[in-house]
Image 1: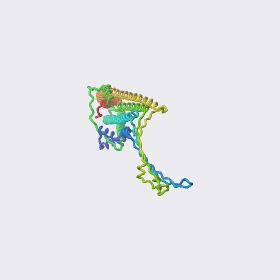
Image 2: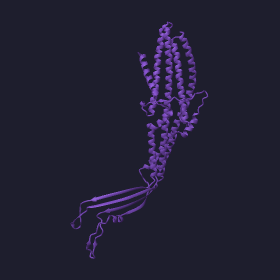
Image 3: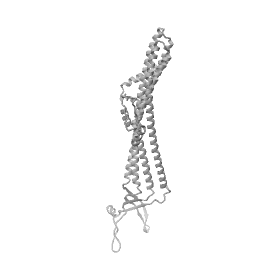
Image 4: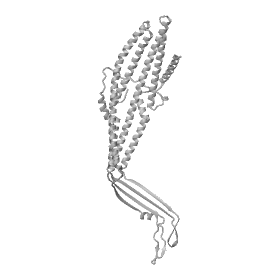
Length: 456
């Protein structure tokens, strides 16, 4: 029954892999291009860069004069007590308007340093976006190589299963002929069941590797594809790798994580200059214009030589009021900070702390980059050594298995020894593949830090 379940599972996986043959094939570069265009984290970093670009533009606009308009319309109704105990109507409609403007002539270079700070913030955000893209490319390359590794494990495990199936057929005939005990056949059939599970595990590993890649691409698994099988570089005995410190020195000059940290440090320094500038006086030039109209403004009454009113004065027209009521002025304001509850001094101290924090962050980023490069270099060197050793192990294990198989076929050894030798070969082949892909990935990381694009 257990074997039946294994066969059903294997059949299902075979159907999945067979149906995948008609899927679209994606290269590593196509995966990277798709991720750079569609990944949400990269889109977020792009919007962040646009935000800081707007902040920089606003910092430049702050140098310009401002201009504000104000308009009021008031309507009053009712009566009031006038002279000689008479009531007067005060129904009136008045309108007024004004324009005002001012421009900062000098404020301790706060405006200038604000522009510089905004420029550094923008450049830091652009480097953060580049770093997000770099991280995504490395993650996709790792997932891509994991798929290649898992697919080769599938091939190895399937080849082993085929060998075991042939051995079952051969052993069955020997048991029927009475040349071998039935226990030998049962042992090999049990081994076959275990190897079936290895095939299914390898296939599952490949599917999970694909799923991981789909998720990096923000692509639903229902829109799946198959990766292109590139021609991987041969790992020769004359291997040479760039020294890790040489890679680090070049990476410090170009990698976005370092450049971003440097720009953030420069931004903090400009913030400190702004805080110090707020301790200094500022000089502002301003101007204003004002005008008024009221329907209760009349021309003087016309009187005779004795002072008697001949004719009541008419309402002054809007045009005449506009000419008569306008007023304007200009002025300069010198603002000298004397005491502001130590707010400016505290801001200077906090800005200094931020500068020191940014310096430490820059050093920490450099240390982390150096550690990553050293780790990649050491891992690549170790993987290469494992690869060379496993090459020899595969050769010797292959020869040992061939010799063991011949002895098993003539009944010189039992199935336990036979299976052990075959397991040794399978382990050596798996270790060789793991060392191979570990080495390729680590060297690609070193090349990437050295300024080369990720290619397979």
